Image (cartoon, rainbow, N blue to C red; front, top):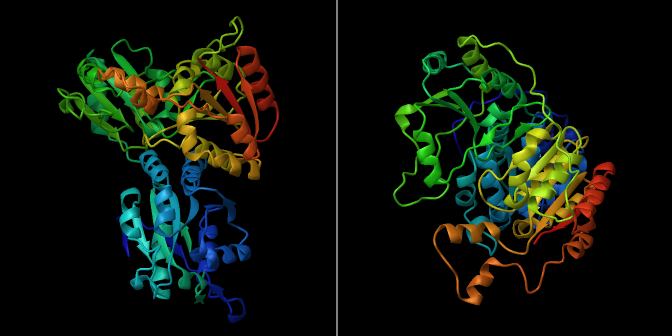
Length: 537
């Protein structure tokens, strides 16, 4: 058993079950997970997980949700945590099944999400025979996990579950993966249910660092406040309003926040551009760079002549931990500067009136922003719709956004699905591009099965625009038709209406602004999953 060093939760021992109600290992694990606050398991089980599936029948407190691909399980668990703040469980089949989940676990790790993975394994006594599906699961799980645990006996099952649940349920616990052999899932257990509990102590405010930044601002030095993590949540943004009018201060958000909040009078926070050619010079234009819940900026891709770590490290001051204490930090900074509290910014609501019928990424974003309901959730993966929407999001109704934190595409639709499970009373809208949607399109089936209230907009331009842009930026002009075809999604064109129908999701196609307006308004007025193909030139 191996695990990263995490603060352990306090166990609640309970009482041993009487012999008549003794349980299996899987039942005990599920009851312990439920007692610790886990309510959902996104699952794609196989033969080695059948005792676990049987245990779910006896433990209804954990809701099982079938996903037709393991990358949907992990992406949904990520979206669920970003909105709910409590980890979901995933159930996958041996190493190959877990391997299918790794890309979206990479995104979840970059987002700081907590996920509790249960990975089925062969019978503990059968593993050494190296059967066809055997693999080095630990090596697969370690890069995306804060802790990896293996049960190889009833005693180690108890120890592994206690430690892994405690760590996963701890504040900012991260991803924890338990390898659970089939025989131990079915083993008889006479063990009290374990409950992981914790007290989320407030993050310490770095008073000395805050005083340094306040002194620099008061002296007129040009200062950048780079916000990340919970600095982009409502409580911190309300404190940031106090700093917005300082002439020598600029406020920018990290490029890929796990969750950020927008609209309804919150300040418009521009995102940091991580392209080395622009970002390095931009950072050097400040005398002080205050990191508030954000990491030190790194170039998205390496570029010759530019450093990987952008800007001057001597000018950077970390004011609080990543993802913790941002509101208190910004409040302390504003207090030091004796800045008054501010009301929400009055903003004119964006409308889609006066647009012609030409459907472009910008006009499509206007329609979405104009008709977005209050308290909606945006899952934005594809840049085609996400970038123009983000540019006007401050003028939309109040909403939360999730973006592609780790760059591994295929996150958007599963994350939207997970968010809809986490917050069934909120509308979820996915801003998706056609190329990345293909990676985890199976999520549509789970959305239909669970009647998830999510609407997915597919920017259908039939090409990989981001790759085309990067090729041009790097000076490549492709002449060979077979090579150019690597960046196109045509011959044949993708049939999104047919795919959605095959997965049980109602779909419509919009080729004009009026058509998109009608489809989107209808989707926002009715419950259930929908897909709208946005036809772009």
